[in-house]
Amino acid sequence: MKRTLEPIYEAVFEDSSHGYRPGRNQHKCLDELGRTIQQRKVNHLVEADIKSFFDKVNHEWMVKFLKHRIGDERVIRLIIRMLKSGIMEEGLTRATEEGTPQGSILSPLLSNIYLHYVLDLWFSRRVSKQSQGEAYYFRFADDFLACFQHKGDAEGFRKRLEDRLEGFGLKLAEEKTRCIEFGRFAREDAQKRGEKPKDFTFLGFKHYCGKTKEGYFKVKRRTSGKKLGQSLRRFTDWARKARHVLRKGEMLRQARAKVMGHLSYYAITDNLERCSFYVYRTKRILFKWLNRKSQREAYIWASFTEALAWVGWPDPRVRKDLNPCRRAEAH
Image 1: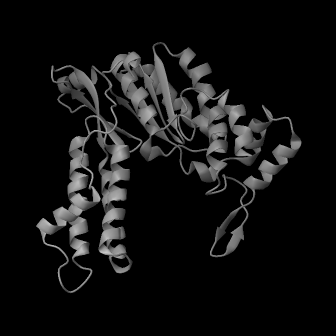
Image 2: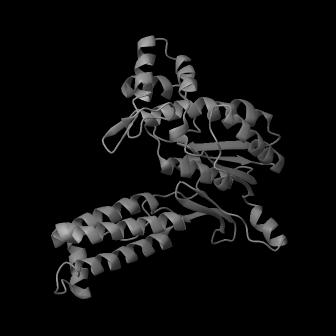
């Protein structure tokens, strides 16, 4: 079903949608967002999040949206059955009247179809055209941002957004939704008021107003404190359990793979400091739990360092160039 539907909808999806689509990922979304703020007339930003989106997708609206492009009733009936298949909890299946099936390979595509009609088309055909100045929009799954040249456009979008979502059975997560001043003039304006420029979090990164070596404005990013803490706690939990079931060599290899996974996502331009801290902390955590495998210490620091070299422990270096000052042609 996914192979059948995907080509149909890839032909009509907006460029503003980046999540769970072939040839697109978080890095591409972050790259375009950074260069838009850096190079376009962006002064205000609305960051928003939909509350429990995957649990609240309205089945009736979902079917209406699907019928726009799918004429075969058999396909529609099959998708309805998938939507109503329910979830299994403690061996018991519970039917669902809303939401998309958890863990289903089809869920991300269905979610993209739903938000294509609810948000993407609405922004490109209504919000953007009715704005006084420039307006840009970026969505990854149920996380989305809207960038505006004028404050009035940003505040107007924020007010209309709630009603738009409620019309399709969705709610804004109020604690994660706000309108802020952000862009090349935000730092200067905030300093004039005796304040610090605002920052925002998107796709696991905190975005803030920085400067180049020459002193010009630059969008910079670092791993959000919440995501960094979560990653280190997960690594600690894994190391504490793994010491009971894995040999030292295998534990080192699996730890390396986990650190590589973190760096392949977070090791981007301007985020080397946070990545270096993550690598340092994971080394200390691994050293601690390896030495608790038995009564006798497994390693001193020198031999532990040799073991890390043996498995090819990754170094914290930039793995993805997301410099917002780079022009699109050089990409």
